[in-house]
View 1: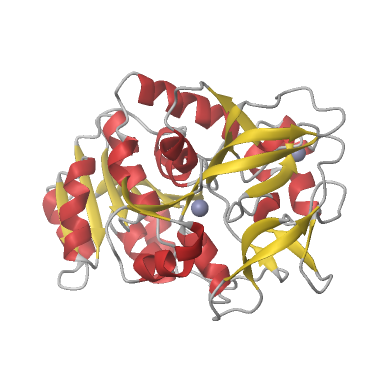
View 2: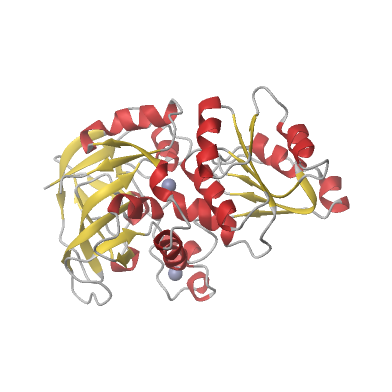
Amino acid sequence: MVKAAVLYEPNKPLVIKDLEQEDPKSGEVRVKMLYAGVCASDHHFMVGEQNQPLPVVLGHEGAGIIDEVGPNVTSVKKGDKCILSFIPSCGFCNACRSGLGNLCDTHRSTGTSRQYDGTLRLKDENGEEVYQMMKLGVFAEKIVIPESACFKIDDDFPTDVAALIGCSVTTGVGGVINQPDMFPGATIAVFGTGGVGLNALLGAQIMNASKVIAVDINDSKLEFSYKFGATHTINSKSEDPVKKIREITDGLGVDFALDTFGSTQIITQMMASLKKGGTGVIIGLAPDGDMADLDAVDMVRNSKKVLGSFYGSVTPHITFERIINFYKTGKLNIDTVIERTYSLDQINEAYDDLVSGKDGRGVIAFPK
Ligand SMILES: [Zn+2]
Ligand SMILES: [Zn+2]
């Protein structure tokens, strides 16, 4: 039996309960969770903005220690500390072979929340099968997952930091540093200063951005964003962010703007705040089915580019490695993102705090 937080119905609290768990099958491992991040993407499922087969153990940002390996596992062994990738790239599909392991076809064809053989590992007390979000479902004390989800780290690497590299750091930092057109000294606007937004600010810092403009509707979050390298902040509730960004950039607009929140209104503002030839990057997930308005003439006359960036834009393990190296050389201060620690039993409280807009990232700490 394993203790987990289960979503049975949208808009109802997660239920903490013991589930039956199968042993790892071929190519799978069991991981004892150490830390899990409280990410907004889980919340989209909790409130039904995005669809997910239910019941499900949510949580896709985490780090843990390998507790048992199934047959034919070759890349990791019992006792290894790992960052968990929520896209465990198969390595053999067209996307993986194109260097886009973050978009692995095999992962999607299994409906993302089943294991690679199409089956599930968890059952509740009524015998109902329980899905694992993105094959992980890290809001559980132990998880059975594909070995390819595991990225081994040094034993002395801080595990709370490692957990965040599993989603928000890779998504935010990777969404900036992995863009092919990115250049040192660019001007960058980051819309949204949640977990991913703060990491996008850190990414801008690594790129030596000349101006880093944070946009949010919450003054305390904007104040907090200075710690992450913001040079200017805009409260888009009280000021027009497009007008203000143009003022800050001497009328030019920014080279790059990022929507880390995921909203059609922000996407329109993001594109309007770009310099000629600038690039807008959509990182946050808007509700399913939302369509963004683009000014078709502005796009052409000003040669603007818009692109989506999922999970750092390249194979996650590659971004993990780059981020770990930046962290080890003191160039990436991820520790400061972590503001609150909860137990698994406090998970609903953790999400209430996320919704109420508390600064920084919350993490679930599991018993050692
Ligand atoms: Zn996430
Ligand atoms: Zn693949």
